[in-house]
Image (cartoon, rainbow, N blue to C red; front, side, top):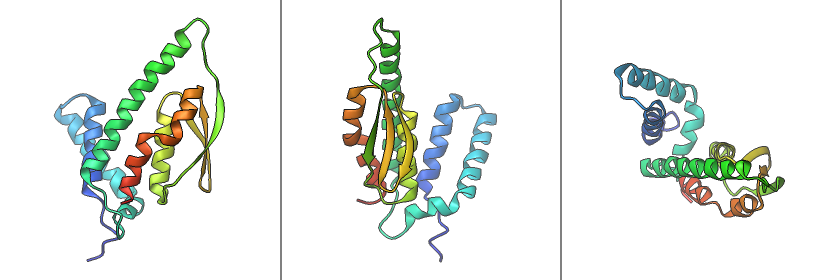
Length: 161
């Protein structure tokens, strides 16, 4: 049996759970649309997703759920922090660009990290070149916290390291 065509079932389930959480309904029409959408995404990205199953790179369902859960928490916290910043009278922002050294080896996990940074309010991945990500940060604390971000370690676990 060829293993390079297999898609991680945990990832597919996590995508569907994310669909349910995003649609905020269990109406049959939304569930059917979710199944069709998730299966289309998995089918069109089969070669990329299969990289997660090569050799020692195995995706565990709970790792994917933990990453998505932590990402949602960081997005909510980021929204609150950015709202607090822009609604304050003195607007204490210190916009800056930093270079983040990426220790992830798979292209799919590197892209996931870049998107997670961009999805988190107050940070945005501007460029990826080699092992370096150029990231725009809204505050000094955001720039200081990014290199030790807990989500990077969780994503690294997807690579089996």
